[in-house]
Image 1 (tube, one colour):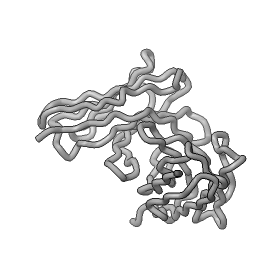
Image 2 (cartoon, rainbow over the protein chains, first blue to last red):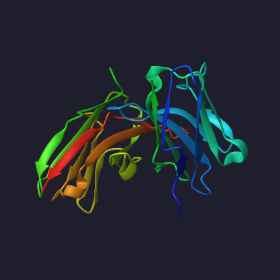
Image 3 (cartoon, rainbow over the protein chains, first blue to last red):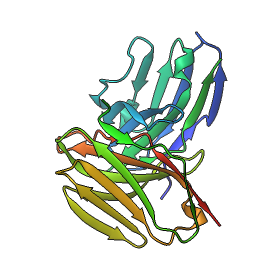
Image 4 (cartoon, rainbow over the protein chains, first blue to last red):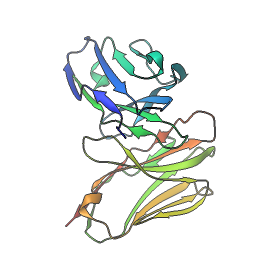
Length: 112
Length: 112
């Protein structure tokens, strides 16, 4: 079974630029999550999708972050404009059952 | 006060030692408790999960939950250098969403 795919793996941008991350979940997983993991911290949920509907985006900074999951499969997370404090690893996860979330390798973003 | 507290370490032990990793939490609504392992530059992977209080064993790993003390533990017996990673505790309530709250992670190094 193929795992969660994410791209790019690494991205360096200057502040005020925009960036987009892509995620392809495990086939058949209806629930998709985007997490932000700042160095030295645990992952923090940004947004959760159930199929193509948003379940929870309470911690998504909506003035600069946006996410979509078209057709209930792939998802993109966008930051526009980026700030220095957005430097982090952005993890995508998907799940079928309630407990087990499968994580992708993450995209490491550096904002200079 | 953070909802989930975890000692960041680092924790260094010799090969074969018993390792004890711990988290405390403040939200009494948490019912599901998980431990994830995260290797450097990889996404977290689920090691174990438990529901409510009690113990659960899987090979060299034992998870314990004490809801009365709001305290969870992960024990690793006969630790191996391949166990060197960051260990993240995570927990959720019994609600419809699968929102996980993570600890900051404990960095473990097992010395050969």
